Length: 115
Image 1: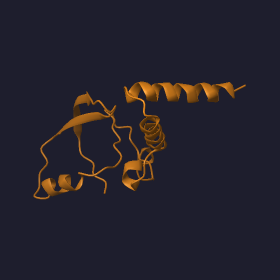
Image 2: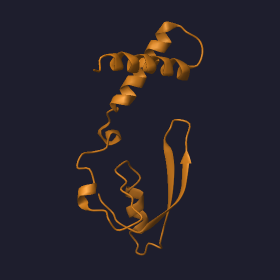
Image 3: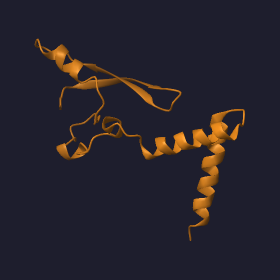
Image 4: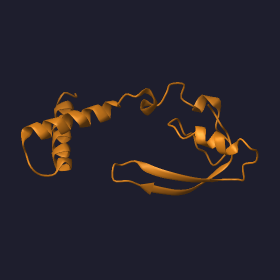
């Protein structure tokens, strides 16, 4: 479902998991179906935002967002595998530090293969 209405981005808040919460205000939406229409939007999809009028149909990706397919992104899969390694290693401490260490090691290995 696609819906178009004017909106104003009023707040951006970062979260600990590196996602963001975006809050929008809309003009008064008239009609008996406005509330049910917005309720149907409580799902995941693409947000295409512009403060000017330069958005076209081509700006909307044709594929479903990863979260809509029920599959993890490649980055989510990699992080999950590194977390399992952390658990199995029996190391105590901070996972974030372990994650940084492992990803830096992977980056260095890949960089060494570059010409």
